[in-house]
Length: 359
Ligand SMILES: NC(=O)c1ccc[n+]([C@@H]2O[C@H](COP(=O)([O-])OP(=O)(O)OC[C@H]3O[C@@H](n4cnc5c(N)ncnc54)[C@H](OP(=O)(O)O)[C@@H]3O)[C@@H](O)[C@H]2O)c1
Image 1: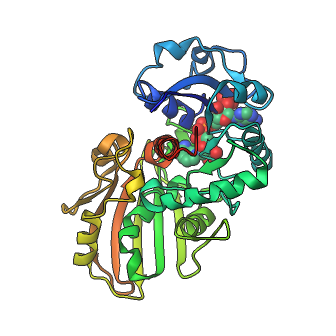
Image 2 (image 1 turned 180 degrees about the vertical axis):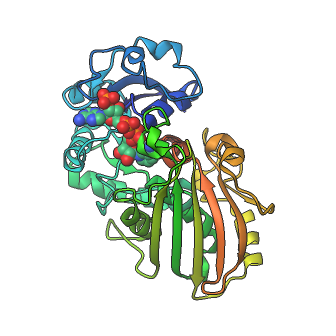
Image 3 (image 1 turned 90 degrees about the vertical axis):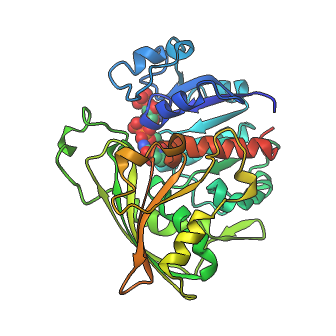
């Protein structure tokens, strides 16, 4: 595999910082451009993140003095210097949607963490182990954008990252309805306890827009391609409540599921344990050796013990049991800034490079 030059849009933010640490020593990708808002543009990276570097690892030496570019005003220069960009900008949705399209139209593929383009029917929203085949809409999107190389592919919201994979091995039992409560870390809002001290010893029962995303995005992931468009699954009902909890990293979900073809807890555990994922997702530099880990211990998965499993790229599941109103209930967890954001986007980019959608 040849090496690819990449840009990180939103490099100073929580997800951007995670991209920087995960891409250090990546076998295929070299970070060429760091970009953020006009407030950071012109500063060195070290200067721009002076009081807000939130990673456990230190800033890679070769990026400390890299001068940050303006993700909007320098778009043309950025697109000309890289093979593709990762996007993790916090901007108003409409401007971000246009900005991502603008990069694609300048023949620079965009792998995005943002929700701005997730509802476009020809923009694939991919969890590589689950719906790799949705890459097939990319040629149709390119036709709409009139591009040869440029396109947008997106990651799903971090809230659904643990429970969609946990339920996917049971998909053939025809899922009828899902009830899910998520318990989401503060890094999901781009914060830590220094920047959000009100979260210490607290729970906030509202995350703007999160419940709508948690209920609709799985249906796109479980959707089918028809005439170059992804048509969302219409057979599954999902209801959710999303809570912000005083945890640095790691989103947990408590899930109840009912199936048209009944499934027992034992069958569910067996199917989860044996799930390998779509072959196209396997053997990539960031692929976990095992995607879903099932824990028999009743007190697992735990944030502190399990969020970094397989470098934060695995999903942890436990407490599978019979429910009185649904068929099964269980708890699952994933690292929100790794598998749920930067790591998931890197895995997706690796698959798109190996499958020659990025070239
Ligand atoms: N955190 C997670 O777990 C997670 C998971 C999945 C998806 N996401 C999504 O990823 C995106 C970034 O999240 P985050 O948590 O990293 O946010 P964040 O920490 O607030 O970082 C936001 C980034 O966007 C830049 N930015 C803000 N306003 C801008 C503007 N007007 N023009 C250009 N750049 C601008 C910031 O640059 P400056 O430093 O210059 O202001 C910074 O680099 C969001 O859309 C979020 O929903 C986050």
